[in-house]
Length: 285
Image 1 (tube, rainbow, N blue to C red):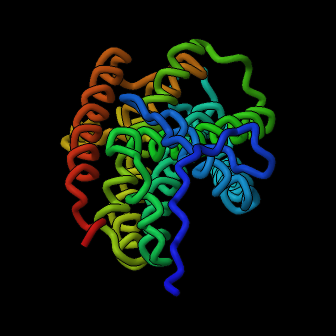
Image 2: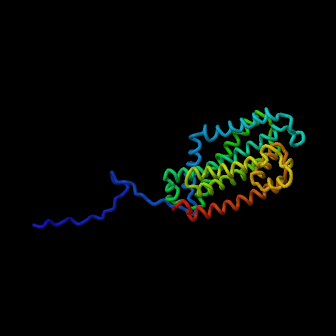
Image 3: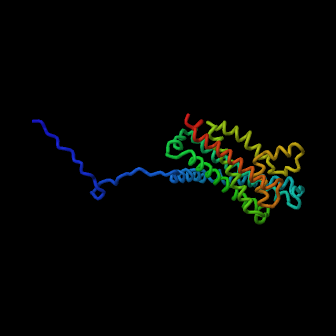
């Protein structure tokens, strides 16, 4: 005898049935994936926070060594800005230089490490658009740069005996604009670099020279022509000069010019980063 199969039952499973799993519904994502953006940002912050001795404390110690060397070598024998001592002049430059370098290092190393380890797909596969990816990486770089800068300002300020900032809002504006610019530059460098050697080339032959030749250790007004004009073409200079004005009230160039210049630099870098991330250049291939 042929066995007759029982007809299938279409009885729906209710949530109240014993042992029935809860229904899984697709996650609704609006115009902005806020959950993905928050997750990416927290990932970037936790990535450098887990090795805080290397990413936060070490740069501050390096800045302290710079300050100690110049304090011993120069001391009060140089007056670069009226009655402002050389050490007081030097501290804002060291703080901002630390901010710029660390903002660049965070966003660039995030992409390069992902490429080298082969987990760059973790950034490309989730439902995160290029704009959200750009914001998350940039905010992560800014967070590291500003965190290191505030720590450095506290330690170096105590060492040099600095008072409260002369123009705190101005200092904050240049701190944000400068860290954002270098975080965006780090994204471009990280996208272009496929290995650590390429990243080291950009850092050693571009970032470090621009940082050291930006008026950190001297006033550009002391430079002979045409080097004084060439120094003002360096975007690092405007970030450091504006931040120095915000802290001690002394600057070499117009603050408005510095603000406008950094806004334009950030706008150009933002558009470049968005186009690169949207196209997947050197990321998907």
